[in-house]
Length: 220
Image (cartoon, rainbow, N blue to C red; front, side, top):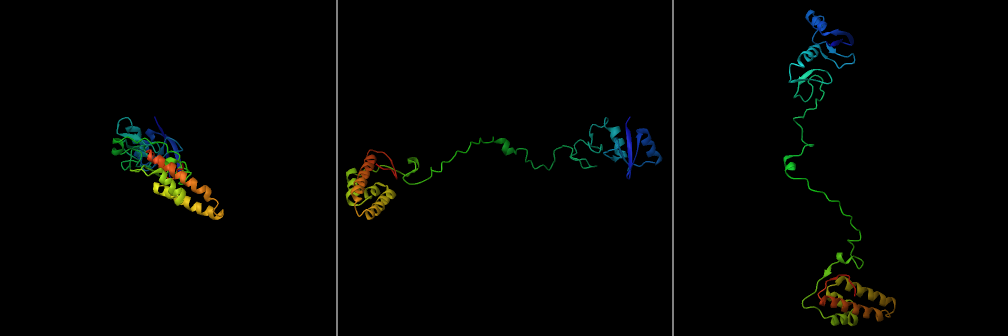
């Protein structure tokens, strides 16, 4: 038989047997509002609920005992109505963040692939850029004559052959670079620059004539 401590105000009395508790309720020495617990440390709940817990636990399968106050509550309750302790049931207002939605259940989660490392040099432009990243010049139809392109860049105007072949930026840089070097060397550099530019235009035109694509900054 269970023994109960009774708490009235700040004073704790007991322990008392269940018979004495019931007798005290009948005589008026105890009231249903008095608090009772099987331990002096609590938890405390009204006497009526403590006795109901003792008498109804085995007879009413729809009731369970609150782990904190020992009060009898419905097994479907979300929280204890006496002390507010969560009872571990699903909240009917659960927003479902932890449960997948019907749409998420219908479609499997897509596989995530590791992000590839990007080479910072892969996006650079200019003569040092990888050929795969350069703008590719496709063969023209009809193809331009390699000898004519070589003569235009090597004898007429630096970079003209490259410009006509589609290497516009490269041809302009050759022209400007040739002018700067000619000024710095008093014109001596043209002995090297013009033949080199003409030979480059000839080789690029030959590749295009053979049906090969060339990079915008490709040489020879």
